Length: 161
Image 1: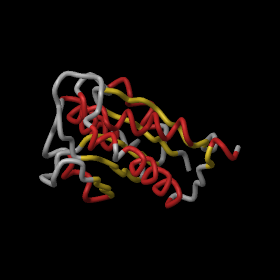
Image 2: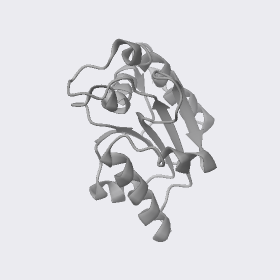
Image 3: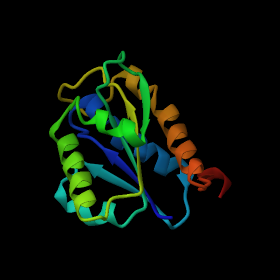
């Protein structure tokens, strides 16, 4: 089973970039087998179609708008995932929704999709995450590792490899 860990977000808009930052932190701290791809999707577009289609499972890591308080962590799976697209923070979420819909029409969609997200505090212009969101990065990294484990993949700490 091939798995794609896709960090999403615009790192120029503060907490909107939390998905990319969490993916970077995961990639820096853990090694994964060759059948797991860890990718900075940024503000992904239709050019990600083939990349997503080539994987059985997608773990999208992103800022999410759920109505929960800022800095709340969220894990959505299966039928919960479409709710993620109802509260858009930025145009890239529409792009991912379109990608998944296109892949489904072509019968090339991943078998399963998980969204690991964090409710943002600040979406202004800036490269830094707000301190409350930055503090959630280690837990998001843990959630990525746990989601991989759910799919039979053991991530190994880089210090141990």
